[in-house]
Amino acid sequence: MSFQHLLPGNLYYMIELVNIKKSFGDREILKDVTATMESGKVNLIIGASGSGKTVMMKCMVGLMEVDAGHIQYDKQNFTNLDVAGRKELRKQIGMLFQSSALFDSMTVEQNVMFPLDMFSMGTLREKKKRVLECLDRVNLKDAAKKLPAEISGGMKKRVGIARAIVLNPKYLFCDEPNSGLDPQTSLVIDQLIKELTHENNMTTVINTHDMNTVMESGDHIVYMFQGQKQWEGNNKDIIFSKDQKLNDFIFASEFLREAKEMRQMDMFKDKDWREQFKKQAEAGSDEKKAAE
Ligand SMILES: Nc1ncnc2c1ncn2[C@@H]1O[C@H](COP(=O)(O)OP(=O)(O)OP(=O)(O)O)[C@@H](O)[C@H]1O
Ligand SMILES: [Mg+2]
Image (cartoon, rainbow, N blue to C red; front, side):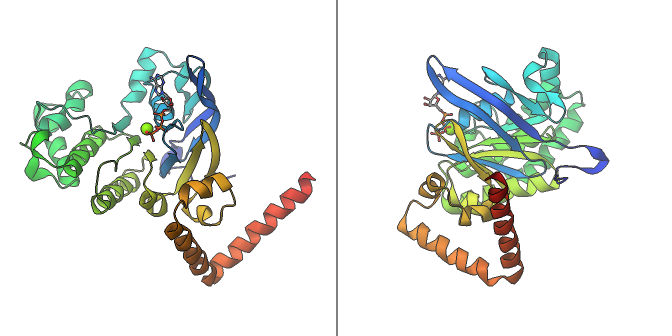
């Protein structure tokens, strides 16, 4: 049994999806998905366009209702919670939307202030202090008085992140945080999300297509294929996975296939890793034998 998810004071903020199903009309979008989002980690949901990533995220935060199964936050069954219970839990959830979804007529500062005005009981002075702290954390203090139209796409994402963390959430959800960004800005955003996750011990869930994110931030990865969970593991497991669908998705180009082989060779050079890999392979074949 893994105790990785246990945090100080025996608090753990794991999210479990248990046999969830979701259809629109007669189109089944999520087909009996069971998966875990591990606490204190950056959890990635990857998969082709239309595989159900956004629908799954919306179900997790309650923007959509599941048809069957349930979502468990720590010890609370989110799906069965009443309106008041859900409102309480939502205060612990921060979300960065694909389009950043900033209010165009509000300044950067006012955008970040918004959740505090909605949910916090603090004084105006306290709230302003918190907004400035968050803007400082995402390196945007100087842009506080600007309107969204006056800043770049990468800056908008950072405002979105500041707004998502302003209430000190335990859970952070980001739908395609790198969409529309250049590779270098994407890395800055990935790094920021990773640091915030570890600094604040959050459970973070990211929907992404970005292979840099997968290789750099993939503590725990769930691969979706046509509404089903096809594979689950981390960015090291991916290099050696034999799952054909996953391989076709991740290593789609000749260049990436070559990069994978080089990474495999690199990893084999590491003696500790080789030993661990050998043990895992042996354990796998033992399990197979036991099943036969
Ligand atoms: N509100 C809705 N009503 C009807 N169908 C929907 C709705 N939302 C999503 N779908 C359908 O569900 C399927 C999965 O959509 P979803 O947005 O989850 O895909 P995705 O994996 O996030 O794709 P992308 O990578 O392009 O963002 C799609 O076929 C989509 O058309
Ligand atoms: Mg999507």
